[in-house]
Length: 180
Image (tube, rainbow, N blue to C red):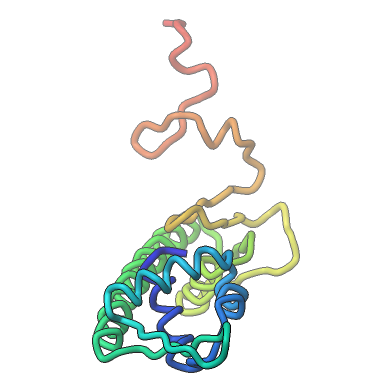
């Protein structure tokens, strides 16, 4: 989880429940208690969070006005990054579907879980391309690769996919091996 996102989640959690424990925050964020302790100390030192003792070993955390301003900035940054990634995924999905349609297919297999594949499937729905759930050797298979989508064509081996192209056409397997 990027630092912006982690700080944002800590501030949101403290705002919702000022009596939360560091162990509770760690479990919520999926990180070690030591990491939460480090982040909290840093947020307190910078004046974004104030901690007061409730009991012997319990603290109550308050997000300060300066912390609320930080939370607003972090939320804005998080939204900007999220929207940029979404736009990149949508563009990549549309490009992959353009390849699929140019090859004469009206359906694909979506291979793999995750948010990128959800965006791909929504793009298929909007573009009128069917997503088949049952594996088929006759349909192209699409999988996410970062913010791109890779299309695996039916009946082609990985070696064929890697052959060089000239003007969009794959060279024959023996091309360029020294034969005149």
